[in-house]
Image (tube, rainbow, N blue to C red; front, side):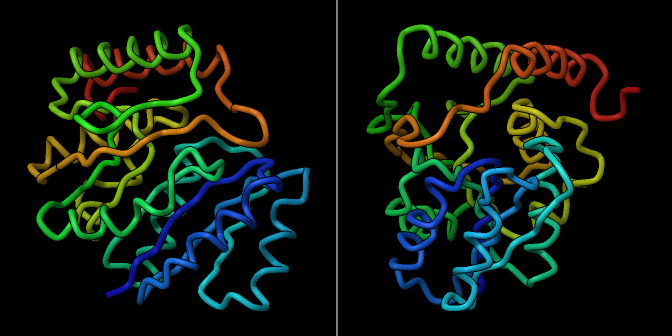
Length: 237
């Protein structure tokens, strides 16, 4: 069994080394980690290169610039599939997703095709957010669940574990979202294809170091993309 965790990075030098070591400290058989770095000016990629001398299951896919979250995950998923991954994780680099939840998600995915580390089921929660960020998140979840008919509670969650067949089946190249709507589009296609999806509770903690990448432009693009996906489907022009 091979597990590949895909982590996109842009200016995560303050977090990435500690996170990588914490993940490999779990001692999970068959675990590999792939960092997709968008040419971070803070030297994130160099941290990875330095760690590769002692961590042999650590990979880096370095891109030419800041090309977007969605395309970073698609590139990472494709590479994970090339590496022969049976299970593919996506998670953030900023410690908002706790590595200690990875074993629980692996156990849960044995009975599902996609497992989501959920903040919105019993036992899950968010810490460190103010009222406005919470309002934004809840509004985005309600909007996308309503328009796309998503059954999952935490549709914006970025902590997920997929079985290989899911990513092979849904057509990664046809995904058009490149910002924060990527998570909803991916979930929408997974549900539409008839795969089983389950949520397990996690505690999401706001980032410890570095700055959030969420901008007003991202929020606007999110709502536009969800509307297009609802009324035009994945083939809109």
